[in-house]
Length: 388
Image 1: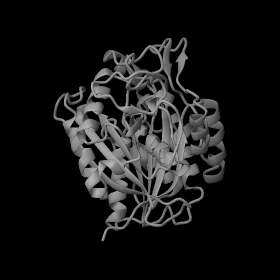
Image 2: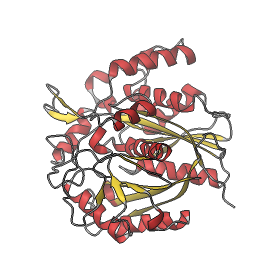
Image 3: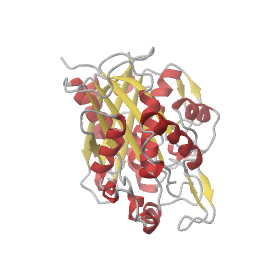
Image 4: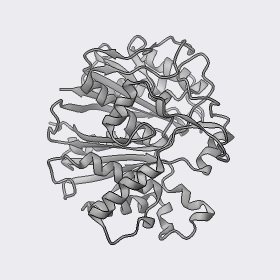
């Protein structure tokens, strides 16, 4: 019999705060973290969601002084600082040997330390940390994890895929505890790439809305700790997950939604649930024309057209390799608080299949939730969370 994997701890760092609690309070208040960035080439006047660097440095210096007072702050990149601050907060109250032989760290990211390609970073202490595996090793070594970290990098489903991988490792008895940390930061490289696709919105994104005109980029880090042991007063498990691929286009999603629907169906079957038992769906919801259309079709095929659905990207943008982790934490917090958060930016349905998009916060019992994600290369992922 497979062992359950429980949510044991979490943390979110993004434009709305530096702890999950702080971010959720901002969500409840309807605060939008996407702001225009003046005089920031190539992002001049673009609405972006950015982490407060001064506050990040302050928190990192405190943690560094406790763990490695002999190492200078300059030996860590901005993204590594995000990972370390997030992981430190998420594991702080875990009652287990989180670093030992029965524990694992999984790092989810799409770009990693991409800033090390920039000219002004050429003198960084370890240029080799441009490689994802080496960045992960540096983070794992900071905390003293016995086992070498695993890296999951599969476009924008990276975070959900990392959580699915962690749950399967626990279910199979490979590890008792898995720390999943997803993070990405905004650089000229990243912003220029999305500008070349003409995919960025000139205002904060509006997922599923008729007036949506593209996505908003964000940065941040999220950490979720999975454990074979119950650690919280409200036990929530990963009860099923699945991935699929469209094989449609390197950047464009499926036109039918059938492949994402396939991943949803398999995740539901694995969790022993049917579509009617899902309390709400946390969509990928980028605010682009084709993604939102595809998701609406997939949810209809999966029998979830009438299920309450939202996208968290209207609050803090698309955080790339961090998105699946951060949005899963917000989903789990929705379950704990019995609150369905409104989908920021949504006013009027703008997708082929009308969805039950949440327009106002709803306080209601929340038992089973589905988180879905899609990304470049046609990848799709789904994961089901169940309140025990």
